[in-house]
Image (cartoon, rainbow, N blue to C red; front, side, top):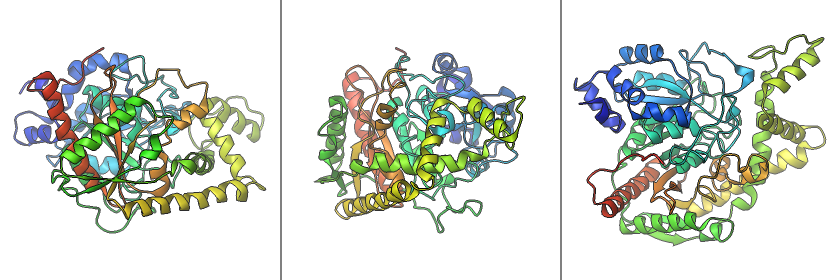
Length: 491
C-alpha cells in the first residue's frame, strides 16, 4: 500500500491496515503530511500547532486498538500534553497544559494519533475562523471563502485529507456549520455524553466536544471510543451511551420532520434545494416526511447570545495576566495589570462577548436578561420535545447560506451571529445534531443539511446520514461515470 493510497482511506480501513501489518502507524500518520494535503496546508492554514517529532513519538507508542495509527486533528481548545493549547488567543500564547482532555486520552488509548492542533476562532467565539491570532483558515474548496467556525481548522483538515477524523467543539454550531461549509460530516453529541474535561470552557452549559469525518462509519467508530461517563466531568451523563453500531441499518419506516416554515425567507435558494434533495434521498431510502410547524429560531438567537456571553464572562475571568498566559509589562497596580493584560491579550470579538455577558449578569439586569433567557431556553427545549413526539428526527438547514467570502461579515457582528440561527437551538436544548453533505451547489461549493434528534438519538442520526451518504455516492457516480470519487479538486 502506497502513501498515495493511504491518505485517502477511511479511518477504519487505515486502522485495519495497521493492525494487519500492511503499514506501520508512523506510515499511516505520515501519509497526510507527506502527500498532497501537505501542499494544501500552505494555502488553507488549518493547523495552528504541529510538531513532526511529537507526531512520530505518538505514532510509535500507539496501541493497536480500534483506531490503530489513525491520524486525528484536535481543536486548539482541547488540552494536550505534547502540543500547546492556546485557544488561538494571544493571552494563552505558549501555554502547555499539565494534563490531557479525557477525549484525547481515550483517543490515544484506542490507538489514535494526534497529528496537530486545529486553527479556530479565538476561544471558540466566531463562525468563520477569522478570529484567530494565527490568521484565518481558508475553505479548501474555494480559498477565497471561509471554512465556517469556530472549528474551521479541524473541518478543513478533514476535507482536504490531512486526517480522516478530527475533534472540535460545538457551543452553538461550531462543529455542524464548518462541516457543512467544508463538505464533511460533523456530529454534536447529546450534552453530557462526551466528556468536557480538558475542553477550555466558553459556555459550560452549551459546550460539547464534537467529531468530524468523511465517512459515517468512521464518525460512529470515534463516537463509540469517546462517549461514556467521566468522573472528572460533573456534567457527564451516567449510564451507558447510546449504541451506534447499527449506523448502517437503514432508515426504512423512520419519520423525519420537515419544518418548511423555517426557510420561507432569508435562506439561499441553493440551501433550500439541498434540503429538498436530502428529503428526496431519505424518502427513496424508505423514510417518511412529516410536515411540522416548528419555529424555535424565533427565540434562539437572542436566548443563546445572552446565555453564552454570560457564561463566557464568568469562564474567561480566570485569564487575567496573573494565573495564565500573557501579562502586560509595567503595570502600576493590580487593576491596571488586569486591564492591560486582557485588553492586549483578547481579540475584539472575545472582548465584545465578555462585555455583553458582564452587562447581562450585572446588578439590576440579571433578572431582566439572564433569567429571562433561561426561561426562554426551557421553552425552546419543550418545542423540540413536542416536535419529537411526532417524528424521530428533524431535517433542517445548517446555515442560511453557502460558505461566504473571507471578510464579508467581519464588520457586521449581527450578520455573523445570524449564520448560526439554525444550529443554536440544539445546544440550548442539549440534543444531538449532525451535519451531513449533499450534492455541491452550482458553483461547486459544499452544501450540508442538519439532522437533529432527541436525547441519545445519535444512532438514528448516523443511520440517516449513512442513507444520505449512500444516495450521494450513487448520484456522484451517476453524474461522473467514475468508479471513485476524487476528494477534493483544487480550484
